[in-house]
Image (cartoon, rainbow, N blue to C red; front, side):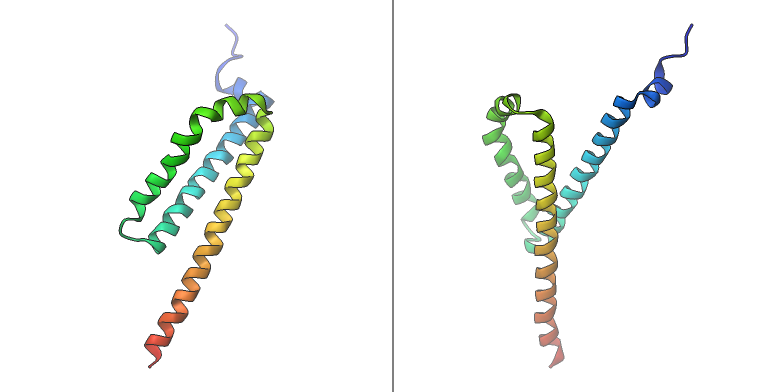
Length: 116
């Protein structure tokens, strides 16, 4: 019996390594994006923020989801994945910039209150 199958075969398979690495990077990006959203909501609307975030995240799934499959089939999958990852990275950077600027403005306002 040959020992050509299993994990060793997958590790030696170049295409599988690329696919697996891409999936790991994508999952890492999803986790960072989720944490950025939660951090943004925790600062901006601490009480009801998590509920509003979940509702906000469901809106595109319910409205665009039925049509997205047709659109993806008409365009290159590679280009679609690349553009969606770039847009997601842009939104994460936007979350970071807005959150840092909000926190810095908020700290400046609080420093004036405590100085007197």
